[in-house]
Image (tube, helix red, strand yellow):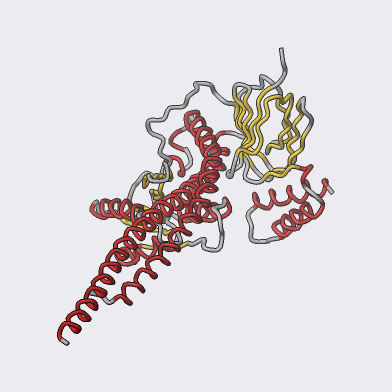
Amino acid sequence: MASLDDLKKRIASVKSTQKITKAMKMVAAAKLRRAQESAEKGRPYSEKMNNVILNLSNGISDKENAPKLLSGTGQEKTHLCVVMTSDRGLCGGFNSNIIKKAKSYFAKILDEGKELKIITVGSKGNDQLKRVYGDKIIENISFKESKNANYFDADKVGKMVIEKFEAGEFDVCTIFYNQFKNVITQIPQAQQIIPLNNDGEESSSEESYEFEPDEDEILSNLLPKNISTQIFKAMLENSASEQGSRMSAMDNATRNAGEMVDKLTIEYNRSRQAAITKELIEIISGAESL
Amino acid sequence: MSEEFKLEIVNPEKSFLVKDDVSEVVVPTFEGEMGILKDHISIISFLKPGIIKILSKSGDENYYVEDGIVEFKNNNLSILTSTIFNLADMDKSKQQDLLKQAEEEANKTDINDQSKYLADQKVEVLKTLN
């Protein structure tokens, strides 16, 4: 059995760990509120953008000559996957969930004999993927220095993706991120952004639009913007999910630490009593022998 | 019959402005300035750097935008833009900052014609503000 001193030290250390996790939980809760708010505020933009594109692509008469960003390159040989994770750890299953989802997708692609390229956003995803898929990772971006997800960062990623697309480096692009549902549930998502996938969604209106300038020009302007917007949406959802995930992970940790302190305290008290009893027995038996 | 329609300006971070008593909006589209009144035909168009003028019952407002998309449908006008500033909140130093940025961009030699045109537009619009 551990000595009294050891137990005392352990209790103290668990208690201080508990303090840290509690603080982290509270910080995450405060950040979550902000992140959640901005995720919700950001939704109208991406929804509207999607709507406009949907209306546009339905209105396009010449489907054959539609911009490549919309219709694809006509083949599906090279897949680009943008895996978006956090830069910080200690957030429960947040990163592993995305990675798991991404890995199963990777395996499927490689099984089909297609080529795979990976861009990781956030250092944690890079850490986990580089062991297995190190040679597939072509870029690693991290926004450690920016505090909140902002459109400027998303635009950078978007521009890079488009540049690579125009250089013919890939045919299909999919982004991986966690969709924020609530504090305990985050759903890892795989969303295809190139070519634009709008199956099953029909435009709500039959109404035709007047376009100024013409459709092609609008589309070729709009589609790159949409890529950035979708990435930005993913970043917002991700940051809300990260904080939510961290909050519940830290909540659990705090509770576990509490349980551990209780257990250790009981053990400490028991061994203290045992020591007292032992001493008493020694004194009594010493007195008797006189 | 009222001559008002609904206006919504959205930027990536949030819903920037919602008004439902707008009588006219003038937007700087690529093909020139365009005024939108009630019962305008459904239209989708692009913005170039310029000033959005909003005329409404509760007062007129002016906004500076650098880019964006305009969609008008069923008397709902949506403007999606990534860069927008209210002129009333914009002081001289902010204007100068933007102008400096735009000028730098316009003076770059390695940009294509379209970005050059956009940067020139920005400079022009910002200069008229001062």
